[in-house]
Image (tube, rainbow, N blue to C red):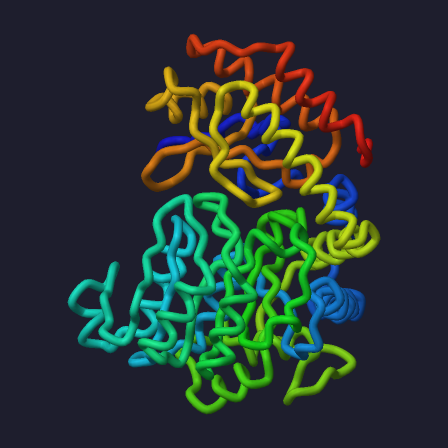
Length: 414
């Protein structure tokens, strides 16, 4: 019998995570994760941490929705839980303007497809009850587009991403909510990229009955912790009436573990599935940090530093096509068009983690999640300028430096 192969210890270097996410996790969050005692997942302190986390989530998201809690996993876990209320045959309108809203649409099609429709193409079903409204890459979903589609199709559900990370575009959440209210449609929103970055209260959008986000972007927590969801009473009543074919991502069952039982808060949750004490400690600390900073102040900081980064990139000859404040999506200077993947790979080889878009047209994405100071933005600009020069492009360092100096001549200074 051959000896098992024992690989060397895995060493992962420090990387500047300057992409769409995961973001750079705060050292306080990492310390909370590493220093948590080895506790039973039903230990009183773990359950207390879950209760406090759900209360902090309600404050952060600006909602009285009782069913506000975290789903173990990444943002896809939270989205899957939210979409679990969509049943075969449900009429749904999906608005897609990039990679991730497109995957949301695929998820919805899988859930809304009948058995026969799913059998035709199980990996990409096309149920008759789902209408997809495709908005071109690089464009936002407008209130007019939403209004027209809902008036025409009159679905039970409507689905839209708040911030589409695939193209860096912010979609009209106010227009979406208003149209859903007008046509008595239950809106479901992918808020994976906006929670913890944008300054908004979900209770200001009564047409939206389900929200799902992630831990690793605006919350800046470890990727495998808890994906926040917030669901209205109407959503829960609909789910009770129809049921859902899932256990682990069943919103009502998940909520019980967070001390939400029969529409009421209780002192502690009951078992649903194993939760990690380490992840609870990290998630709890990430939420504390966000609330201590204040969402309004944090949102303004993102706006400020994104503008500084964008101005410097324009001076390099890039064309910025996004309007998100945590992510810049750009076209390279004319002579470098078509070499986006090469440039990104060169940067990654130097532990500078930027991303290409994942669908056509190929662009470059540079993010500033939890990189909200002049030093970090300057480092990003410097490394990106080096990458452009390496491919034979030209960068006027004086103009780039002047753009940064102008941006940082005003407050805030950090």
